[in-house]
Image (cartoon, rainbow, N blue to C red; front, side, top):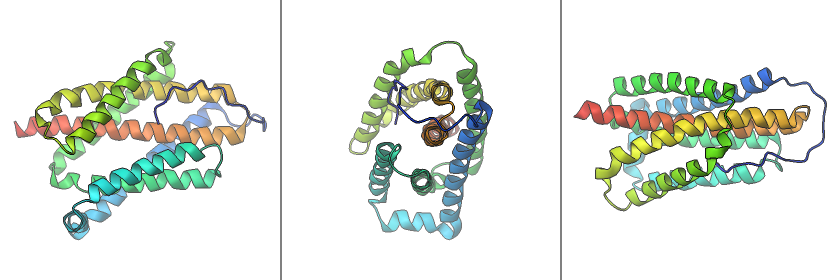
Length: 238
């Protein structure tokens, strides 16, 4: 999802109706609704230990979810400018539900107080980063290549950790990931604004780009939350 954009997409103008404020509110609204769907999914799965039973009954469920999430993310990106808005919206919420399945296991790894604290810190931190990204005059696209390298390094580590015990490196990688997603959040917020400026007046394109930015920001929030939760969880166990 995090590929540097040239932001030049040919499209037909449909008239200037959507303002930057409405576009921003719509994008963050979709993102927030995705987070709500994820939270509700995780909550429902934890009723009567339904989620835990699934994890125990299907030992490879984690791998299936990873593949499914990757598939939905790829399909979302590939079909963003071809499929209908309703289809891309459906793919977004399918991804949110799949993430909820993954999150259902967090209750058995961390205590509730740590999860709530991590979520609260993430909300405040994420909001601050979005304000910075939205208002800064610095061109954050300049650091995008570095962020891509960091992101791919994190992905490679996560894949390797599925097969090799790399627990001794968890804290270092977690800290690096927190920095990477901190910068990505500000960058994606600025990119959202630039996309609007370059396609202002094209209502159909703005609807598609709003979904795209919502998914990117959703992923940023989720990853910030997981890193902060991991750090707090380790501190509580020490």
